[in-house]
Length: 570
Image 1 (cartoon, helix red, strand yellow):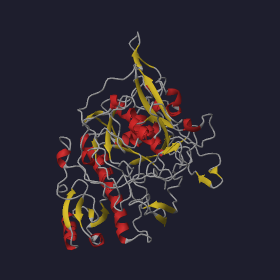
Image 2 (tube, helix red, strand yellow; image 1 turned 180 degrees about the vertical axis):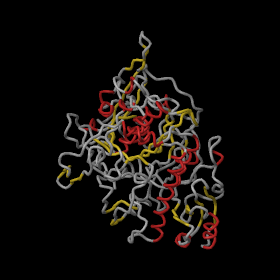
Image 3 (cartoon, one colour; image 1 turned 90 degrees about the vertical axis):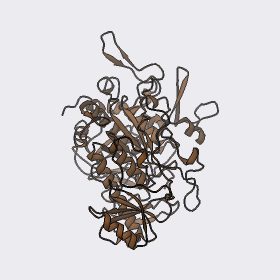
Image 4 (tube, one colour; image 1 turned 90 degrees about the horizontal axis):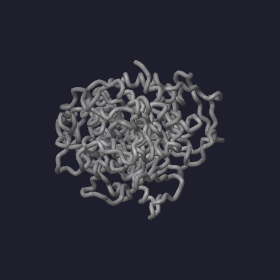
C-alpha cells in the first residue's frame, strides 16, 4: 500500500491506490473533558506508560464488567482503567486470548503505541475571527445579502456540480455558526486564512500524541515538534484534515475558496497521527467527545487501522488477531452509537481500492502496523471496512468532474449511501486537465514547505499547489482526490440542512441524525448506473454497478446537492 493508503485521499502525483485507514491510541483524561461532558468511570493511571505491547482494550457484554474484570485477573493481567460509556476495560496482560475466551468478553484489541493522550485544546480561547481580505458577502441597497465568487472559484468544479455557488446555496443557506462540524482527521490548521474565521478553538481537541518510531524502530511520525510530543489542537502536520475542513466550511472572506457550508463552526477532533494512522482508542475518544459536547455532524475520511477489512472468524488470522478485529468492530459500533444517540450525524468516506465491498476477495494491506507487517489474506463479505460498513453511518462514494464514479472509489449496493465530488485524475470525459480534475482546498503552508512543494520565495513548484494573495496576505491550497474529498462535500450539505432545521440544543443546535439523513437523500440528484453496468475503467479494471436510479452501488441515493438542500422541505 502507498504510504497514504490509510486515507481516502490521493495527491495529484499519485496513481491509483488502496483504501482508507486508521486505528488505536490512548485517550483523553477525564479532567480535560468539556464542562458537562459525561465522564468515563475510570481513566488510565498517570503512572502507566501508554501503548506498550500487552496493553489491551477489553470490551465486555452488557452487564459483564465484573466478569470481564475477573477474566483479566485470572489471565494474570491487571485492570488499569476503562470507560463505562463505551463498555471496556483497559488491561495490561500477556494473554489476550485467555481473556477473550470468557463469555463476558466480546473483543480484545491491542492499544497500539501512539502515545499517551490528554485532550489538549488549541492555545487561544475561541472567537469568531474577522474575515481576511475583502468580504465576499455584501448587503445591497435593498437590504438583501449578495454573494460573489471567491478568487479561486473558477477552479472549484466540485462546488459548481453541487450548486454551492452564489446563484445556488450561497445565496439561500450557508449553514450557521451554531452548527458544530467535527473533523475527525489528522488535525486542522486553525491559523490558515481560509479556516481561521470559522475555527472553533474552544472545543477543538487532539486525542493523539506523536510517536517518532514504530515498535521495531522504523520511522513513523518522525521527530516531535512540540513539548511532550503533543501537537496543539490547531495544528495539522499532514494536510489531509485541513483539506477536509476547508471543503466543508472555508468562509466567504475574499481569499481563496469557499466551502460547501461557509458559515459553520469547524471543530478539530484529531484522531489521526502525523503519519496518517487512525487507531481505535483515539477514534472512539473523538466520537464520544463529539457526543458529549454537542457536535452536530462529524466527517470521518479514514478507516480504523491496522485492518482495512476486519474479519471476526478468518482462519488465516491468529486467535489474537481475530479478537483484535472483533474489538475494532465492537468498539467502533459502540462509539458510533454513543455519538449518534446524542445527535451526531455520522458521515464517512467509503474507501479507495475500487472494490465492491459486497464482494471483497482479498486484502493485501493488513495489518499495516507495525510497518511492513501486511500480508495477503483471502476475505469475504463477512469482513467489514470500519467505519464505512457499520450501522448509522452515511458512506460516500466519489465522482469525477464528468460525473462518473471515480475509478478508485469503493462501491456496493449495500454499502454506498450517497455520492459527492472526490476528483479523478483519469476522468477523460471532461475538458479539465491534470490536477484540475481533483479537488482544491486549503493546505498548511508548513506542510507544503516541508514537502518542498513551494520555494523559498513562496511560489508553488508544481500544478498541485495554488497560492492566493489578497490584501498583502497569502494562503495556500492543494489539489487532492479520493473519497476523503467526497465525504466532506456530503458533510457540508448535512450542515446546511442542520442549520435550516435544527432546534436549540446542546452546543448550539440539535437535529435528529435520522432526519438529517432523510433530507440529505431527498435533496440528492438521483443518478443511474452507466448504460453498460460492467463499466471498464481500464484493460484490467471492470466494475459492476447494481441497482436502479433510486439507489445503486455506484452513487447510492444520488449525488449530494447543496442548492437543493438549501430549499428542500421536510
